[in-house]
Image (cartoon, rainbow, N blue to C red; front, side, top):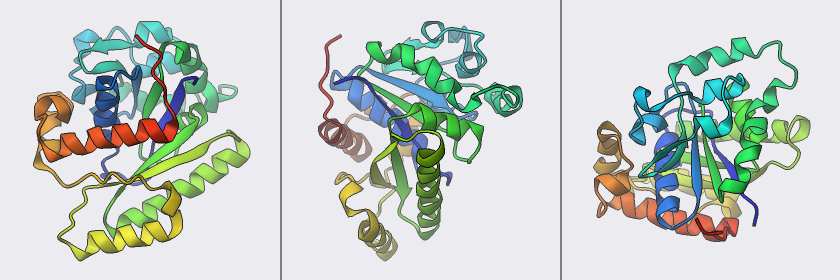
Length: 259
């Protein structure tokens, strides 16, 4: 099957979006799936979590958007997998591209030439609705939404699904919702269970069975500049994202084409 581009997106911050992007990318790479992670958030946390420093970057995703570099020049190869890094300079994209024709499709045009090289391209989208998120959704074939198990996350889910519907109507008619994954789940609390039940009432067929628990190793791994699978392979967080990767491969019908 051809390469699939999946945007990891939520209009609410703090739901585990970057942790999911990084950990899923690393897990897919460990399964032999040729995966590229695109850090499309100006906070550049995915870049740091993949252990990429500024001196390793000849260019970043902002240079790609503004056509100052080519896709192949921007990809950084790491032991965790390939990544297109980001930097705080990405905040200037909305201003730089304001007068550019078809500016919502800049990321799509940049990533399409990379499709033959990968089985999956994951985009860690910025959390706020704006030109960056629109670029991520226009470049993607489908969207993966992480949901933290708290009530405010339900509002973020509603906003994100509304945005997906609007993008499908006006900009990217083939965009699909590939699934929702519960993050920071604590089975000991009634709140987590209540939120999960509420989401299942509306999206039962779209929810991944794998649930990501609250786990201290997931919180610690970014400060060490590595995905959780390399920080603590035996942790519940690492095992959960490995399980999510296996479920993701089955749901998306991904067949590795070999390296």
